[in-house]
Amino acid sequence: MHLSLRVLLLAAIAAGALALPGAASAGLPSDTVTISGRAYAFNHMDTFLAGATIKVREIPGLTATTDANGDYVLEVPDDTNVTPYIDPPDGYNEIDLQTFHTRGEDIENANFQTPADGEYAGLAAILSVPIDPDTGRPEQCVIVTTASARNVRGVDYQTFWDRTPHGVEGATSSESPALDGPVYFNENVIPDPSKTETSEDGGIVWTEVPTGTYRIETSSPDTRFASFLATCKPGRIVNANPPWGAYELSPGEEPLGASIVAASVAKLTTTAGDDRKVTATIEAGEAIRVNAVLRKHGKRIGHVRVDVEPGKTKVDVPLRPSAVNGKGNLSLRLRDSAKDKVTTQYPFVLPAR
Image (cartoon, rainbow, N blue to C red; front, side, top):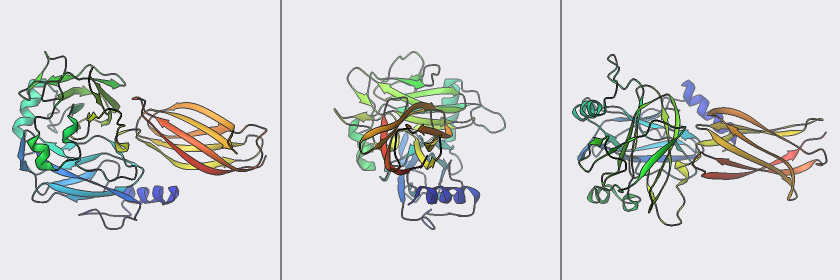
């Protein structure tokens, strides 16, 4: 799909002009991917949440409903940021997942580990999380993840369950931008402020997170993990749970495309005259570094490197005065704070002076 058509689609959905209730498949063009997974009760993997509504923060009106096994399939536009969240049955609590960036591959096993009221209240009390008395939700935001083993990724739910506990011991996490350090869960699945690294449970939690986007990195002396993006607002609980979030990487393995660099190019334009330039409009869900190189016949004719904040930003790449008219190529590399990057090539026609 052409970039401008994709943007029009997203705008139509957000404005309510394209309503997509129910299974979320009606009305979308073929340039989509699916997000699928299971909703189950926190600490009770045999309790599936049927009839829950799965939604996306960035695309109001896009929904799916979980079946008797708690399973859902949600169709979403490709090459965009999506933060799924669950509107659960009575007795359970709303949970957000991490923010994904769709990159041509279906996102599988995006599970919702959803706390019942009792566990929700207990965890809030243990962690002294300030709760808004009017909403019953955290006054700020909570982020949770698990340093999870490689053997629970790419398997079915029963295998995932059989391999629980699936945490990796001895891992620590950091954030960009920085936060007060996290609390680690002990082997009894209880947050334990005395711990300085993960237990076999692998659980990690940040309890009072201001509004913003946070790239969470996890490491240990022996194991590499993928980073993830949490998008925080007051009242949200972001649970980047297995097999996503801080998932273990095999030796030499790169992170999955959906979990890195939450940004894309929405538009590409050229400007003629004495101030010739190529402008890339970047839509970013997090702070990223943009490295843009213009080439013609392999020769560099323009370059800029710039840091951009979340939101929509125009990045201008001036053309060298010596560059002649004709076809050129823009190589655009986007890098997140975990130093993961994606590079895309865009052809364009050099404007006249």
